[in-house]
Length: 396
Image (cartoon, rainbow, N blue to C red; front, side, top):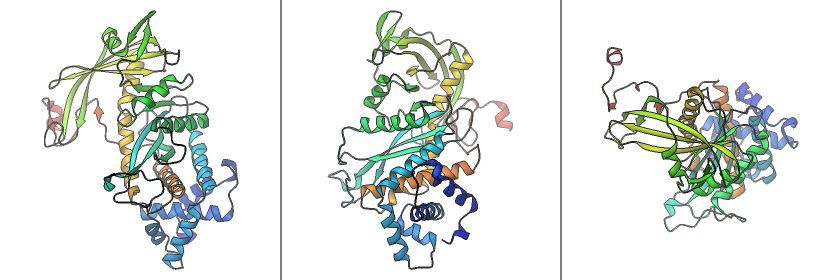
């Protein structure tokens, strides 16, 4: 793709990302390669090198473009340098209240056999790498941007555990932000071991769901389990929410589920770290289901008022909306369609993809289209409902 055909705003982003102020100096060849890859991925909506080469539409053979991209993609130093640069760029936007959402997903390669460090599997259709992403989102905005991505498998030299890979990714980001921002762990993809590593850290700020109800906490000089504390806390603050439930969970169509949510909190001490944190008891019930209780632990303080506590709960509940939005953007590039055979090429390729996503979501402005799973008013549309729709919605 001739430079003149690259959108000016993308050119500006590439220049900023490659600027000397952000990291170790980059040579002319490296700069041109990064600019080409950002433009090619953005235009092709793909991480497949052949598709990227087609998108660049250079005045040379397609094979020559593909070969150049593949050769430059095998650059361990550039992979590290570019990841550090993107993280430094994003970290400058992170404040004390910014959510740092930690999410893990699998990057599957169906029927692949020759990719370096791809886990061995009896079912070749299920072979996959694991990827930890940390994305930043302001609590009061429908916006986000990616900060860091890390890919691994249990075949990579030095591998200890998935939990260790996630925890080291978190530490890398917190070091870049100088511990600004609050970690929100995606409870759908983050396991017990990772959670307990975060809970054992004395410096990280976090809000997370506790899966292990047997974890001990100390409350008023007495030892209790998480399960015991759920019954002790007065959940004095409540409100009605509406949860959009996917097809197949409650029926053959999407369902809007009415929920009564009530919450309370108390300060406890964690033996895992010796820190005092807030234990939040979050309880929900509906016209279909009995009451259920969810324990959250957070280092956030000053949660005595209804506004503060419910604000934290809203931040936790809306985390999945941010993850879903990012997943939709990421999947639009079909990342599983990569065709590189070495681990280092894959690392750099995913960082380049995250860079394109950073550019695109930032270029759209502060507000992105996000579907709210939990909403304070009924969801619009032809939905199955567990309640009678108010007249104002029927007439509207």
